Image 1 (cartoon, rainbow, N blue to C red):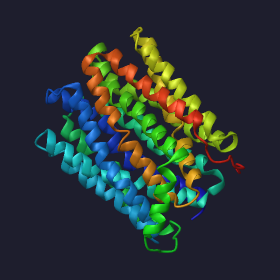
Image 2 (cartoon, one colour):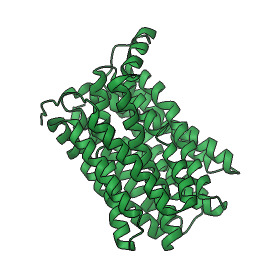
Image 3 (spheres, rainbow, N blue to C red):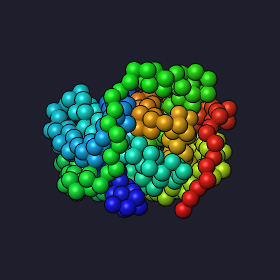
Image 4 (tube, helix red, strand yellow):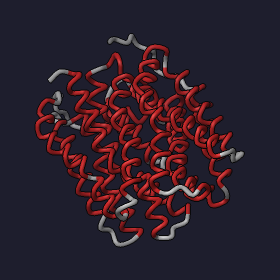
Length: 389
């Protein structure tokens, strides 16, 4: 199978794997309303499910670097997620739902370091570009899944909506029985303690540590916005599920379409200007939201903030791989783990801030983005590389 065809299948696989978890952007606030949860409890639910997924990133990344048949690993992620979300739809209460969503999220999470590890290993000279193309799948899921589930929730309850949302992952699970055979194999090797300690040393001091904190702050800002925007629109502007789904999906379109192009720019011009500008733009947009402008200005500012953060994701991930220069799967597993593990704290902190007031919540998101921009400015990224078409 040609590289471009495999990249297309990986993008479709990303779309299918992310579809059910992206539906949660609207399903979880609906659960919150149905169970009479506070904003902090809604944020906690998002944090728990993301922390659960974060636990799978690094092990999956290590497997991607050490297991020969990575296609089978990718195939397994679809069925883990599909079965997990189906069981979550049957959860009787808050804590059982949180636990089952966290377990289901592990399947979706495992896809990312394995798939991106394969892509960055096979396309060393244009890492951010291929990561950006792969990211289109997840971004389109973030756009279309909330839109679809918003209309779905007008006719069914959240349990049925969640059960229906796992169908794309199950369908792609059948497709990957064939696609998995075409995934390039690597030499099987044992996990070396010395190699793992060496990789850890790269990240725990100096420039590596600055990059770690930057990645965490970046995703804390994004998680704060994505987890609270649907709740904000319902609370302050009376949006129903359909209207919230349309607004939320519209906010994600710009970043989804921009990711491969912004990634390509970072391959040519370097990571720092892209990372700093994206975070700074989001910080300024969130700062505007602190003043609670009119609805249309609010929607526009939210669109700018979310798109700016979403668009630079591939550049940040490519910067992490550039920093180590090897062990692509393990490095990306660590980066995803930081984003959805520590970074997921942005959701619960935003929920606590929203409990005080919505300006407090947007101010917190602005502070996270500003901190990421400042750290991006003082971080030394890998050298830019020649970008080949």
